[in-house]
Image (cartoon, rainbow, N blue to C red):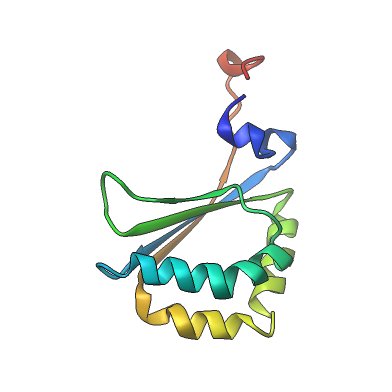
Length: 120
C-alpha cells in the first residue's frame, strides 16, 4: 500500500490541497513551533486530519509542505471557509506572518493510470 493510500487518499479523496510555504532562512524551527501550537488545533477542527507534513531536503530550500484531502471542490471551499473564519485563526496569522516569505496552494487530483490498477 502506498503512503498516501494508507492515509485514505484512495478511499475517495478527489482533491488534494498541496501547500508549500517558503520560510525565512534559519526560521524553520520557529515556524514549525508556531504552526503546531497555533494553527494545528484550528486545522484539525476545521479541515480534519492532514495527509502529512514535509520539509524540503533537495531543491528549493526552507520549504514546509503539507497535504490535505477533500471529497469535492465544495468540501474544500466549506472547510477552508470554516478555517478562515475561525475566531482563533488571526492569532496564527499574526504570529507566523514574519516567518513566511511565500505560499503556493495547489489543488491536485489523482491521475488514473491503467498500469497502476490493482497495485497496492
